Length: 262
Image (cartoon, rainbow, N blue to C red; front, side, top):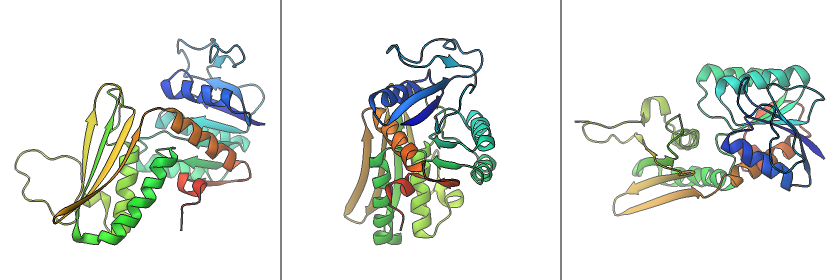
């Protein structure tokens, strides 16, 4: 039985993770916590009657794997706690800047971490398909990444859209910082051949939709993923947790977990 701790338990993703842990026989939810002062602190993590009470910090006996879908600052603080104790972590937080990514890499030298902006198996299959399509089309098509999420999402483009852009740029020998186009307004001039364009939609309760266009003369190929429930991310995170159990240290992603890396 793998002992799981969930950070950010009161949020929508946290609650989905709690439910997923309770429904899988291979996992037991032993720790749940929220930021200090949160109104849910002291309450049971779920209505099942068997879930742990939400705490303000990690305390008591340790666990096997932390699952963290919170914020960059909170995730790094939680990772530091785990690194000091040799614990493992699965991180689905997005919005890290370059210095924060470097800090995560440093912490992973003392612990095993899976960090992926999207834990969905389907999305990660799409990433592999993007690599294949970009390699086949080369510079003969225009590439656009379109993503949509719920109105509460605070970062844009989504971490998944950026990951898609990174895969495309790496395959095509481009630099996302210089070739990525994240806004168009006014007189922009014609599109350049190296652009990787991004469009962002924020509306209502959209859970997550991503589409990449490969648009050439007289034809267009679209690779699309649409999520209809957060359960796909929670189940993917638990798959990562199980995969990590024999890893002493290192920074991995969902492509490692699924065996999709060349």
